[in-house]
Length: 451
Ligand code: FE
Image (cartoon, helix red, strand yellow):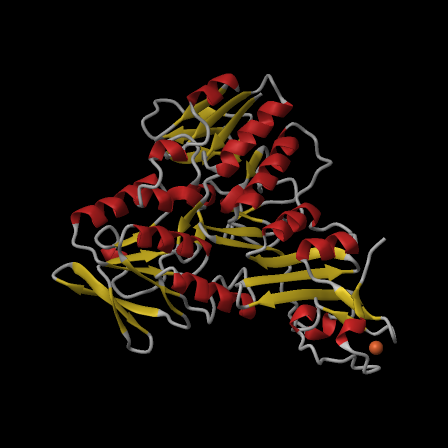
């Protein structure tokens, strides 16, 4: 069996790895337009600040491909897929490359919002960051031009990580976010506020509730941006991190069913026989994923699907996001906000604690005693507990210990003070506080003990 994979990002490469584990005989070939072996995109900002080299980005070196007998062809452009003949055409190849099974893992491209002058200034002061070439271009621009002020459009995970490294380059750095809080897709209002304070304390300016209308140019150089309210922000470098769009042209042109992404079923089969798709380029049940855990889940399932093991089916991925900025421990996982407050009581429960002085925040969402999601800021111990127990039935004693929020019981009347529900920690209540039920003094309360 010959399996051809288009794309060597996380989805394509992990598909190859899982396939090799399941089938030691198959011929596996990867074709990619990238010039480097599989590398980790999340660390691209650190290349700009020279914290790491390009070599450090590469996850699998050549010997990994040799050892696993996976053939990789880099810097290749696939021009078409012929579903009838079961082969693909590659720019510069005399003959088409045939396949028994084809996996499309073409990934995604960064969005450029409809900002006046943004598209025509790309490469001349306006940049997106998706691959090694982008990182090198941004670095060269900073080195060669007189850049003092940088602006990052988009206050999501990638935008903030990029802002941090741009700040490390010694530039005045500002993040502009359209939503009223940072990480709008990962955080609630309370934690968004804490994060903003923390980011600003690192010397990065944050502008919320703002959309950029125009990139201002003078003598073909970027001078700044104009926001929707008319405000002007000075910047010689504008970096856009505003989400992704699946790369689907090749699939569409070859006649595969596409919408926003390449349509797949729960075995990650496309509309054509023996053609599969994984990663950022797919649309499953109307949803685009664009996160690494989804790529890895899908790679595992597509590999099983290809070798005929159809018992494991894809059913979506629990989103888990960690902000990778030194000095900030922030993770958001699963369901963290209940849209409708009335659902609390219908089996849903929120445990929450916030320490604005220490800049800590923890929020746990449970349904029928199952851990459904969390936001954890500055809480390392809780992060590892939650990661291990997501979607599982929890032991309350273990959970309470991990999040360090307890129930206190009045020994006189049995009333309960639950720190995970009340705004104030028990120890922070005033000394003259008394039991609201029986007026017993504070010292009459004891921390709940678990057997
Ligand atoms: Fe009491």
